[in-house]
Length: 154
Image 1 (tube, one colour):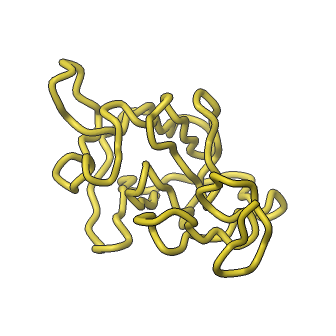
Image 2: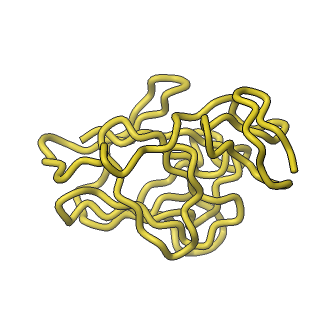
């Protein structure tokens, strides 16, 4: 067992983010992420107006998302299948982003993100998404692809 440095919650060895407060527990990981979103606060519906964007909270930079319903996020490379949103110019490799890391689905009543069996995981508000599972994301939710922090603006 380990103890969270921020809130003193007891956690299993190997835990990356604290379940209680969202603090990163590994050396080199981001210092803090948003606390987990409680189900009673999840939005019923998100209305997309304007151009959806990915925002990098650390720098304030943002990139518009292509106008398709499903988008693969990752980093370009020698795989022959570039992602729909190439994060390589934002130091994606150093942050542990896989070539095909996650998929965002903007078609439903609220956007969803799915981990594509990435090496370093996909996190929403400090919770790791199991590979192949979809999780709803809303305005302001913190998304981590490996150690790269993102936020979706709708």
